[in-house]
Length: 261
Image (cartoon, rainbow, N blue to C red; front, side, top):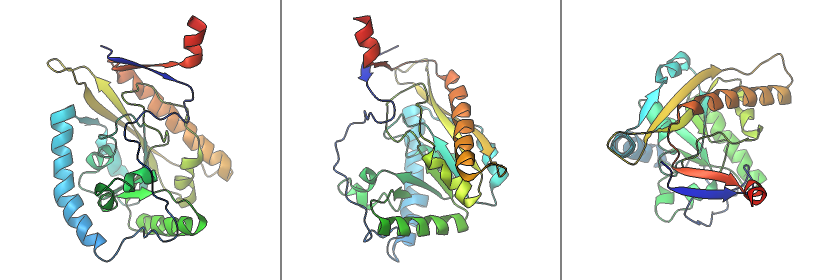
């Protein structure tokens, strides 16, 4: 079943999510840890309200299922990073918390996610960590990550950066976001969201496959270790795309279309 066709130019930079939000600038004045009320807001909004709503939404809307969740238990006594493909505007922010339902999860995001009117004030309490825009903000950002690592949190990253709805392959993401496990000497995992047919519904089932843990290769130089980690995770994610059995949107490169014409 295929409902649409999208023509793209650049796998690394094209963005196909709706919205058109003008992102706020994340400068030195942005408080990554929030005020003294942030822990209270997170305890109530995230742990006792948002997770339950998210669980119901994912089950009822997507029939969401996770394969390999037990693998996360192998690193329960340390912080760790997880990497996933970016194919679902609403579902993607929720999947990491569903993977780590009884733990505390944070997601490194584009500033768009904290710029949404009204909701943008809540997303930081839900775990959104916007990327910094200047040196002062970067210093605060790293201090905040240092604190989360010390507290043994799970930190999720979408290395593809841009949303391609229902995309059934893995795009050739850069290696830069894989410096975190190397810098902190922490394990990481990857997850691949796949779309599978359902018998009585047009909307496909969303099934998430987890692989790992992956550890940085300490025998390599820093840049080599980062690339090596990126390549291993890319291969694992790409392997699990075989579980897609429905294509809701077909993506065609414009140069391929031109050649056909």
